[in-house]
Image (cartoon, rainbow, N blue to C red; front, side, top):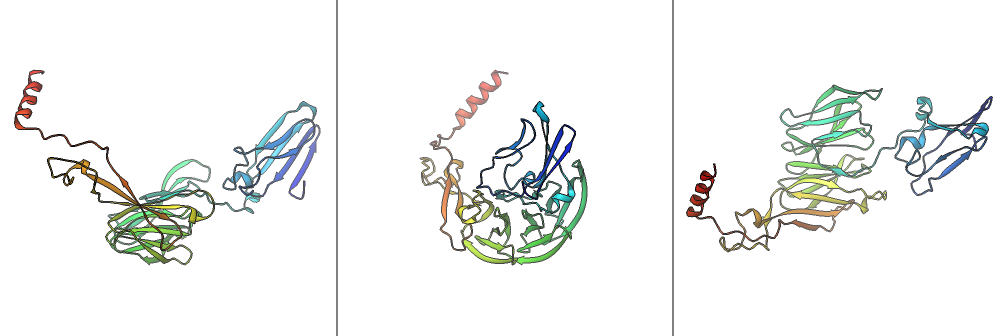
Length: 324
């Protein structure tokens, strides 16, 4: 079994302690260790040894068997002294724009306070895993904070400030701003790539998206999307390569729907709800000059109804009054 395996015999009870190392997702996750008697300690995909994102892949596992009875007891033992030697791997996940974010360990919430120009940090779970509600700190940031993104390792929070045209980098261990990054005009939405290496910031009135390198804490590129970008979302395909993921940027204003037909308003859709279509820009992550795909979101293709005349309104009113 190697140096990581310890076995103790107490009478008829045979106990094995095995400390596993993190397992690459590409490996077969079916591993088996046989013990005394007919029982075994077996771990399959979807259970204890799910992925390297799971803390269980680095926890010691206690397996016991009672001789010939075949009784198997599997207990996940949490030993602080042992798990300290294997630091947690942060969970990867799709990124999106938000004004409130939860740390990956689910112990703290960070919230932007738009009117107070600050970032609040609130503890929502204590060391025992119980729900709490304790304000840890309120940190001054730039003017009119709009969005916050927390790094996968929970070390930093990135806050976009619309009026200041900056991104405040907040150290969540020190509870203070450690860097102000100059962004475009009126930055609003923001999102991190799954691995946390790049931060995408939608510059609302500039029509651009800034790409911030979170290692150097500097703008590494700018994507010209035009219009009035508002929110950002980034996929996570789980390949470990951010170039396989896609950045989506929404426009706050709609545009005319060229397929809309309205005989009463010259057919151009201006001033008509069904005459407009939403716009989303999509481009690959990790590229400072990416090809941009325009996605249009059109309402149902329903032709405009003729306007209701005064006589029809009076008739409807009379019918409604007589039915009371």
